[in-house]
Length: 203
Image 1: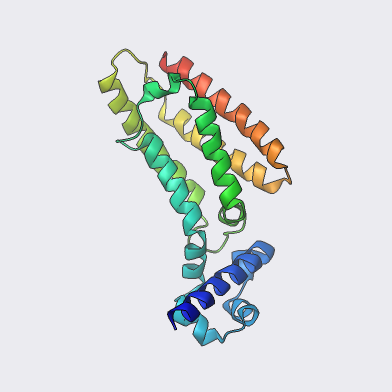
Image 2 (image 1 turned 60 degrees about the vertical axis):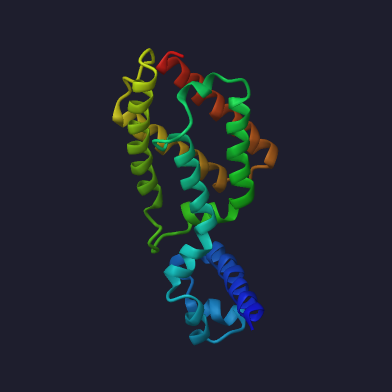
């Protein structure tokens, strides 16, 4: 019985993903999803209380990954700022971005381009605001740990830097780039970011 429930849940998620990608959150109905999944509407609500909950559960692997990346790099217990000097830092950062895009490309497309009308519609703004706060706290902690570095960076610049990251992701998702093209663009972005931050903080 548990296997049957798991299979039905997976089928609902797979069907909803396809429909959300095709029509967007707002234009996709729970009736559409139930019909395509071969179940009744009441059975759909047995698994998910609402279309929005279904959407959030579908996108959870992608949002969890974005949150983990943020906390790992800029949470108060995040990596040391001097790690940007280390050999392999640029490559490791590039592979992290590539891994997230390759694994969750369709979910990120839903999140950033197809979420209008859902509770995740403002995710970009939420993430930018949270990231800006965390980076400011992280820079303050790094200054206490390494008094020689420069942390005189405006709050708004950090805000814009976070917006730029999402704009980059949106552009990648909107265009039919090959994996090689994505890697090239991300490589340029990561190198530009890392070199720029090294200059700004003087390490």
